[in-house]
Image (tube, rainbow, N blue to C red):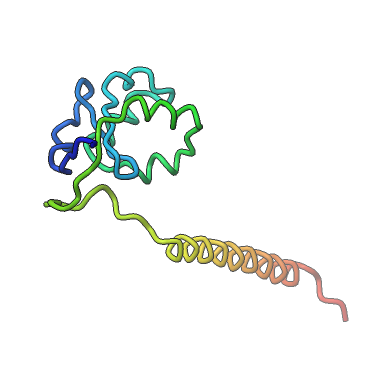
Length: 130
């Protein structure tokens, strides 16, 4: 059976020399890997001691990184006694797609306004023929 860690226990391990993180409800001791991280040690030390699932997934890690995590695995998270929010709240797919849609809509509106202003400017700067 895997060792269970509370969120508070993981939070106590947030220094470069003693660094735990939670990814997909599993606890990893990444202390020995901090200086070897390809993106730099700051990436790990900035998120250490908490749930970093979203950051890990967003970075698009390779299968090699996933295999390395298996070697650094030390247990599971016990969420039954959570005394504080864990990590950043994850956005739902609907929230993500809504953000993308609103960004695309804004881009379309801005492009339309630029084209309309260019047309008006062209009409105003052209001599009127009688």
